[in-house]
Length: 191
Image: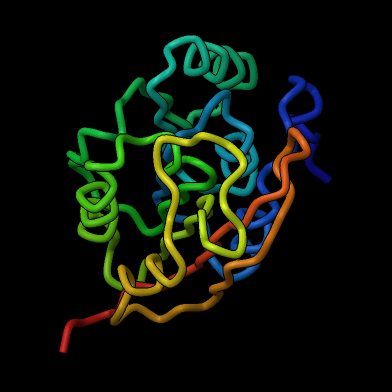
């Protein structure tokens, strides 16, 4: 039984969708986009994934680096990186982007998603969870970006959608809003 490092370091538990995805995704080179202080990266690292954790917040990255050093976790790298740049230079088997897109510049989201897709290895996975704003459920939080109904599904046309929903959920601060949740597998070869 592994020690729960998330609770040891006062991190929130890993996102439920990351935990669920790990039931089908074998440990591989993984990117945690918008990692904050590392709740998903630490969880994935404990499962044997080789994780690159990126976030624009240097103090969050410092906090994660302290945990990595304290625990001697050589399979996690933490880097300060502005996701808006959409210039990932390495390919991954799994890219997780949970509750991150809504903090990006709206004009950059298409480029970021295209970059994520390009940098996913054939047969690899993308996990995205993002707030939505729809007529039925206008977003109560003033995020810079929200998805429209069906937008994420359209962006991933041609990929195998292992999970896709646009359900109403509750944020950690209690706000009720609609989220698009998607786990998609990149085709092994293009037709």
